[in-house]
Length: 282
Image 1 (tube, helix red, strand yellow):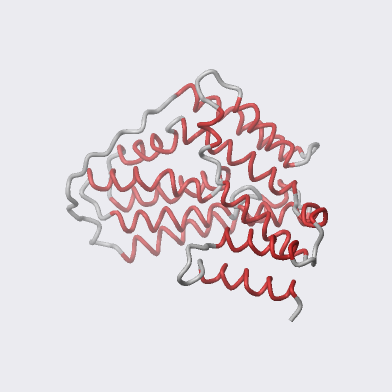
Image 2 (cartoon, rainbow, N blue to C red; image 1 turned 45 degrees about the vertical axis):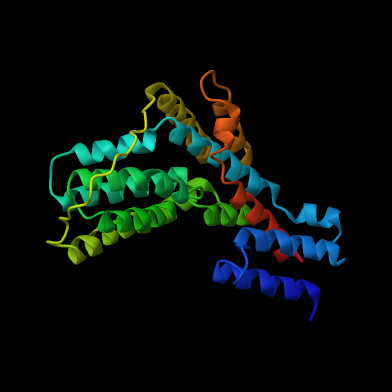
């Protein structure tokens, strides 16, 4: 079997399984190891491997991760979750508001970041209101995925597709926004129906450190995000350039250190994409 085909099959087998049985090698490690094997085996030169990596997609991902990091550092996600829970009303209403909010946030700030940032606060909120966190966590996960499909920056897959096919941001939003909005309503309806009369649940008390909310840093992030979306809709500059510019502006701060911001970047995902670019090209 040709080395490039063997590496391709092996890498995607790990993509499906999640990790190599008996080893600590996960998807990212497999993608990186596959790229190394192709270069070491002579199938690709180092220069060809570097050229196979879509720098535009990596730059777009990195820039948007920095924008999301700004909101995480400012405590924005936690504050939004707490404000939702503070509204009086039924569990069905809280679930409805959570689904719409998570979907909207995921459309602009990527779905995985929204899930990671909101989930811990959501569990704490459910504990305080004596609610079963399971339907709300399911709503968060499903709504983040559905909402992220509305834009070309909602998830890494959309970013890759948009970059490869040169899809216009505004046109895609018109095509993807309606089915995503309808999908959010379906998510709420299914969960509200499935858990009707079963939302109440007592959970043991657990001390959770309240994440501080920084209004100034949040406002800074919102201004940059609005300008970024406006630039994406206008379309004069490449998306990756706009995203990196937004991330670079947010790195210039008197209160947020560069290291703190970069610590929230998903470097594993960037390495995964780079390895897959090389494997697929081969």
